[in-house]
Length: 225
Image 1 (cartoon, one colour):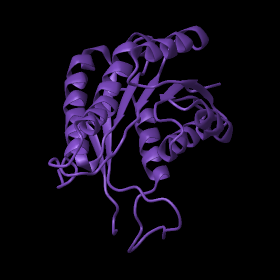
Image 2: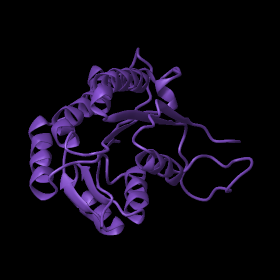
Image 3: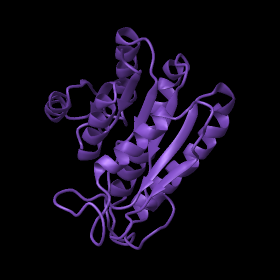
Image 4: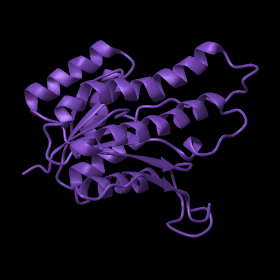
C-alpha cells in the first residue's frame, strides 16, 4: 500500500529524479512534473513513476495538473516545489528578461503550484510542502542577483505560508542545499560534496517525520568540500 502521493516539479532534472527514486523506493506514489514531455517521459520511465506535463509559470497547466491529481488520486500528500532556473550575470549586464525568468520560475511558479494544490493537500491527514531553496536563500554572491533575489523571496514566502497554514496541520518547510555535485566523488573527506541523493534523503526524512514535528528550514552543507 502506498504511503501517499508526492508531486515533484522540475521532475526530469537530476535532483528531481533523485527525489523520485528516494520516495518510490520508500513506498510512496510519485508524480513527476516538468515542461518537456520527452524528457519527462524518459525520467518517469527511468524512475518507474507517473508524470504530468507542467510548466509551473503557466496557470492553465497548473490547473490541468491539479485536475489530473484530483481525478486519479483524490488528494496530494507531499508537494515538492523543485522547479528552478539558475543564471549568473552581473546586474549591469544582465538582460531584464533573464532577471524576470528567475523570479517567475523560482518564486511565482512556487506560488502558483502551492496556491492551486492547497485544496488537495488539505485532504491529506499529514500534508507537507517542501520548497527547495538553496544556501543562496541565506547568503548573496556577486553575479547572482537574480538567483539570490528569487531564493531570498522563496525563503520569505515559505515562512509566511508556514504561519498561514500552521493551524491546519499542513507542514511547510524548505531545504537549502549548498552546491550539489554529480559524478565521481569520495563518500567522505576532502572533496566530498553533496549529491542529489543526500538532498532527496533529507526530503524523505521530513516526509516520514511525525506530523507533530515541524522543521523550519533544513540547510545542508558539504562537510569538507
